[in-house]
Length: 196
Image (cartoon, rainbow, N blue to C red; front, side, top):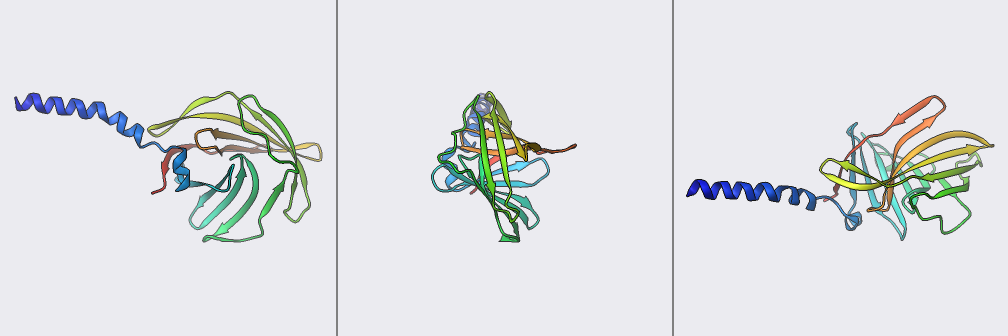
């Protein structure tokens, strides 16, 4: 009898385990307290919701970090380099000269003129190409992801290219790869959790 009860309890626990793991996966509501995205390198990206339609992302390790404020969770508005939590240089801001910016969506193509306030008075064109949704797994959690290719042009020449992964659940995109000339950096995200 005891063996039968134990077997029943073990079976019930095994069935409940996936449901518990699923319940632990963050949702959009967790952005209020923050999300922690983990990279394969051991670095982390912390994401919080800012004012309406914006997210703030801080990524780094060992006292050095980059904080990025994003419109629609994808278009950079301000980039600040941090050292031990304090700005180490003036921020770079991005002025698109239009509002609102296009809402992220599968199949969207957008070309935006951008003025940068980085001291050099530069202007660029940023071309965004949104792909079809796919399902991406981060540890035990799976989310819909829209891949986005961003190409940056200065003086009519392409200067760099990025691939972003936009998560509609959170209204936020993280950098999956960055290419400049022959250099390609790939960033592999492996986990997501709510900041407690």
